[in-house]
Amino acid sequence: MSQPTPVTAKPNVRVVLFGLMIAMMLAMLDNMIVSTALPRIVFEFGGADHFTWVVTAYVLGTTVSTPIWGKLGDLYGRKAVFLTAVVVFLVGSALCGMSGSGVFGGTDSGMIELIAFRAVQGLGAGGLMVGVMAIIGDLVPPRERGRYQGMIAGIMAIAMVAGPLVGGFITDNLSWRWAFYVNLPLGGVALLVLATTMHLPKYRTEHKIDWLGAALLSVGITAIVLVTTWGGNEYAWASPQILGLAVLAALALAAFAVVERRVPEPILPLGLFTNRNFALISVIGFLLGFAMFGAMNFLPLYQQTVQGASATNSGLLLLPLMFGMLVVSLVVGRTITKTGRYRAFPIIGGVVMALGMGLLSLLDLDTSKAQSSLYMVVLGVGMGFLMQTSMLIAQNSVEQKDLGAASGAATFFRSIGGSFGVSLFGAVFANRLADSPAGPAFATKGGGEGGAMDLEKLKELTGPARELVLGALSDAISHVFLWAVFFTVAVPVLAWFIKEVPLRATNDAPPAGATPEDEAEVALGKAPV
Image 1 (cartoon, rainbow, N blue to C red):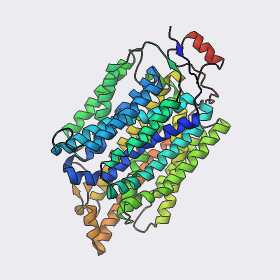
Image 2 (image 1 turned 30 degrees about the vertical axis):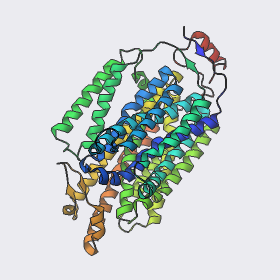
Image 3 (image 1 turned 60 degrees about the vertical axis):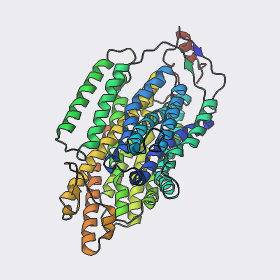
Image 4 (image 1 turned 90 degrees about the horizontal axis):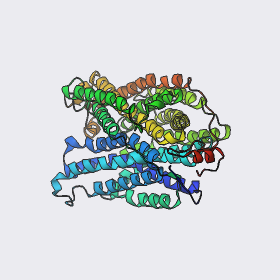
C-alpha cells in the first residue's frame, strides 16, 4: 500500500507564487530576448542558412516535452519534477552562453552547438510552463484558481513586451551571450524560493513510465513542427521532404493512439477527451494559438516597415495589446473567484478577439499609431478573456490525479496551434506579396512560397517605389489578419457548447496512488494540499 508523506507546513501561496512567476517569466521571456540577439549571433558565427534553427530547436524542445513533463508530475510528484525542469533550463542556458567559445571544441562549430543547446533549454522550458499551471492547481482549489492564473497571464503579457526591450539592451550594451546568462541569477532565485517554501503532497507508489508512448508522441510532434516550420520556406509544400514528414507524423500519432489505449499509465490519457468540456477547450486552445501567435508575429513587421519603428520601439508599440490583456486577465480571474462562474468568458473573449482581428485587417499605409493602438487594445481584451480561462476549464474538467496531463495537453494544443498559424499565415503573407504590383521586389527562397526583403534596402527606397513596396507590405499584413478572423470566429461558437461545471471549493480528489484511507481523509478535508 502506498503511504502519503505528510507535509509539515502549509505553503505560503504568495511566496510560492513569486517563485512560479519568475519561472514563467524565464520561459516566456527567453525566446523573445534571443530573437532580438539573433542578428548579432549570426554576424559572429556565420551560418545564416541555419539561424532559424536557433528558434526552431527551442520551440521543438518545448512542444515535444510539454505533455511528458505534465504526466511525470502526476506520477512522481510535481515539486521534484518541476525543480528538475528548472535545472535543465538553467543548464541549457549556461551551455547556450558558452557556445562557440572553444569550451566544447573548435570555435567554428558555434552555430551547431547553439542549436543543440537551445533544444536542451527548450526541454526545460516545456516543464516550466506546464509545471507552473499544474502546481497552482495543486495549491489552490478551482474556485480560487482564476485569480492566480490571471496573475500568470499578466506575467506572460509583460514578457511579450519586455523581451524585445531587454534583448535590445543586451545586444547593444553587452555580449549576446548575456541573452542566456541573464537566466542564471533569476532562475537561481526561483530555484531557491521554490525548493525551500513549496510543500506539496507526495505519494510513494510503483509507476511504470510509458516510454513507447513518449517516443511515438515525440516523433509525431517533431514531424508536425518541422512540417509547419519548413513548409513553404525551406521546402515547397508538395516536396518529398514535407510530404514524407506529414506521413511520418500521421503514422507515429496513429501508433501512439493505439499504445495509449493499452498501457496502464498513458503519457496522454485519451479518456480525457471523452469529457466534452476538455475536448472543446482543447480545440479552442488550438484555435487560440493558431490565430494569436500566427497573426501577432506580423504586428512588429508592420510597425517596423510601414510605421518606421525601430526593433526596440516596436516592442513598446505592443504595450496597448498587453495592457488590454493584463487588465482583463486580472479582472476575469477575480470575477471567477468571486462568482464561481466562467462559461461566458470564452464566449465573450472569442467575439472580442474576432472583432480585434477584423479591426487589424483594416491596417494600411494611412493608419495612424493611435488607430493601430486602439485595434490592439481590442485584441488584447479578447485574449485576456481567453488565455487563463481556457486553462482553468481544462483543469476543472479532470480529476486531480490527471491535473498535470490536462495542463500539459492544454499547453500543447496551444503551442501546436501557434506552429500551424505561423506557417499558414506566413504562406498567406508571401502569396499576397507575390501577387502584388511590388511582387518582383520580393525574392523567394528554398523553392517554397516564402518571400522576404532586406529591411535595410527598404530604407533606401524613396518616392513612388517606396510607397509601392510599403503598400504591398501593409496589404499583405492586413490580409493575414483577415484570414485570422475566420479561425477566431469559431472560438465563441465552440465555447457556446461548454457546460458550466461548478468549480470545486477544495481539491477534493486524491492524488494518483492514494490509498482508501487517504481518500477518506480527502473527503473529510484532512488531506494535505
